[in-house]
Image 1 (cartoon, rainbow, N blue to C red):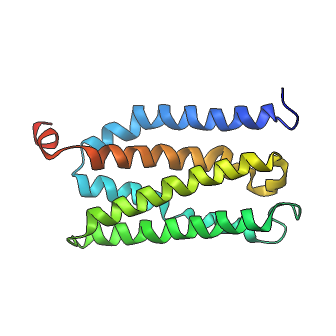
Image 2 (cartoon, helix red, strand yellow):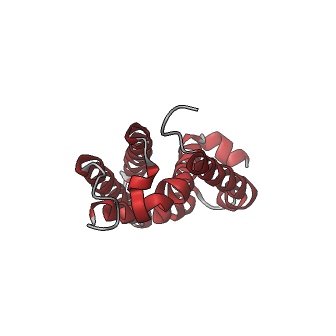
Image 3 (spheres, rainbow, N blue to C red):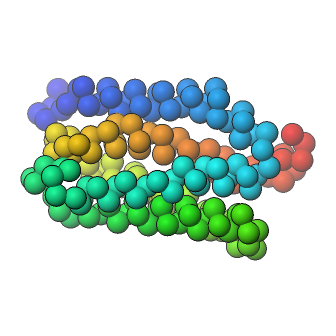
Length: 166
């Protein structure tokens, strides 16, 4: 194994993805498919409204002082932006704004790319121990978020004719 490879952490992240996917396919997706599109999208966006939790990476003592301040800032502000976009998407869907679906696209693309970027940069750090109390975020919360982003994409890409046939 390469130096710095942390098998327990990798297995934890893999377990987070596997469990998130199984729960989504078994319980969440069937319920979402039965809902009107805007309601399903609003529910998934609501889950992402809690992404302000990433700001904790910038709180002194939450992560190791050796963790790059640039990484912590990128994670924190990226997540806060995703949370604000999720709240905006919820409002747009609730109030039936004409631009609601483009806002959902913006939220979902931003949120997905932000999480993938954080994983990529987190792997470059090479020591998940530097995440301190934040270790649960990439191991548990991010897999849940990424699986829900996939569900948003699936709903957004569903054509009207497919929706009417269901």
